[in-house]
Length: 325
Image 1 (cartoon, rainbow, N blue to C red):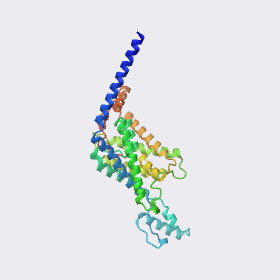
Image 2: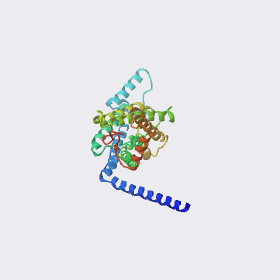
Image 3: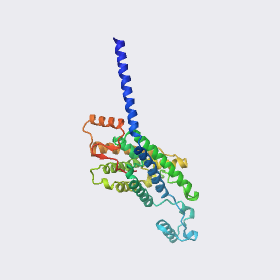
């Protein structure tokens, strides 16, 4: 009797395994469609355009100065010229040309470029199904069961490849004399790794909250999602540029790090944004706008997300019109 029972259990397990394999094959057939491949390609193209435009704003083009016998132009050079005049009037040493060249990019200029590029790319590629452009956003949507694990993994791969491609292209088209570090994320002097980690978590959390709030199709904010997300990215940069050059986006940090082969403190720009993304997703779905009334409902949602490939959000929420970074 014992042997018969064991054989019976083994047959049940084998049958169950075969059913799961058949279901997985069916999911793959339904998933690998032209529409799905278009979404992955959109992630690659969107991230590449966003990263190229944004990192290009961090390049310091040499501006002629009075010391070099030229005339200054633009807000930044005007400020430098004013500083030179002030220093001369008080008897301070003159700024050298090298110090002018090593000045940091205008944080407002960089912040606006990052935010505008997000909004523009989102508007352009929104009709293709929406884009995430950011592994932190993709992870947050996965944590909220808004995308399937397979889609999330492929999206992140496309984002990282897009960032590397854009960074390499920018490296190739930029003169070596002004190329610098291609906007590589680095910690400012005096900022510890854990301080930088905290800043990255906070600024990414506010981005994810904006993403979730604007992705609700019943919300009046939905139609303004690209603009709101762009403003959120701009705000994050205005806050964090002084601390970490502002990442908020592991893909944005990964591309320049690969091209320049510089990975010092690079883990901060993964753990910070990803940790902030998960935290914001949990706070939104469990506290701010609860989606589940019991643990059973939560487990059911997780099972459905892992066994299907749906790019729509449960409970009247949609990510198809969500365009984030």
